[in-house]
Image (cartoon, rainbow, N blue to C red; front, side, top):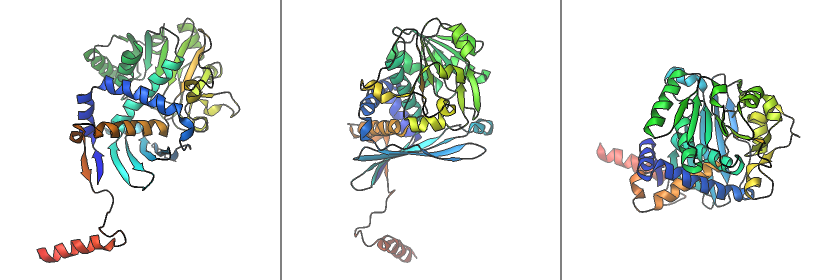
Length: 353
C-alpha cells in the first residue's frame, strides 16, 4: 500500500502545521541536501515541448531514496480557466523499487520554490536587505512574499504585474497576511530602492522583464535578483546585458544552460552552482555593490527534499490524518503468480452471478 496525499490533504497539512513554519523548515532541509549535492544522481530534466507548453519529468536519487516529479508549464492555460503549472510526485525505495509516497505537488512545489529562493537570498543578498521587489504576482507570489518576510525579515514588498487582476489578488491576499505591500506602477517603480528583486512571470517567450538600464537607475549599490521565470528553452526574463554584468549562480549548470537566463551565453561563461557556495567551496557575494543573480529553473533535488520532508511529517503522531493508502502497486500473495489477482476477481464475479 502506498501513501497518497491529495490536494485536500496537503492543504489541510499546511493549514494545521503553519505555512511559514513549513517554509522555514524547508529552507533548512534544502540547504542540508544542497550541502550533500555530490551524493545525488543529476541530469537535465526530460522535457516534451509543444506549441502550448511543456511537460517534464524530474528524477533524482541519493542511492537510498528515488524521487521524481511530473510537471507541466502551459501559459495559455489561464485563458482556459486552468493553472499554468501543475505537478505530482513520487518517492520510492531504491532497495525494492517500491513507491512509498504519491503526492500532489502543485502546492508543494510553490512551497519548495519559495524556500529555495530564500535559501539563495540568504547566501547571496546584501546584508540588511529590507525591501523586495516582486515582479509577477501569479500563483507563486504569496508564497514568495511570506517566505521572505518570515525567513529574511523583509518588511516591504514592492509588487507589480502586467495583469491588474493578478496584482489586485496579491495585494488583497498580502494584506490579509499582514504584509506591507506597495502597489507599483511598473517594473521600474517596483525595483526602486529594492535590495532583493524576484521575477516570476509565466509567458513562454524570451521576455525582458528587467533591463540593465532599469537596474542601474533604480538601485543604489548591490542587489540580489532571484530570476524564477526562465525555466525552459526560449523563455527568459532578464536583459542579457544585465545577465552578463552580474555574478551568476545556478542550481545545476548543465540544465540552466538549456533552460535558464544563461541559455544565450556560451557554455564557457563563468557560473557557480549554489551548493558550492553553501559548502564554502566557492565564494558568494564578494562586495556590497555586486549584482548577484540566482538563475533558478527548479531542479529535482529540491523536489526530493520537499517529498522527503512531507514523508517524514506523515510519520509523526497524527500524520495519518493527511493521507490515505492506495493499492498503486500489484502485490500478489505469491510474487510469481500475478495472474492470481485477476483470477480472484473472476471468482468474485462468478460468485456474484
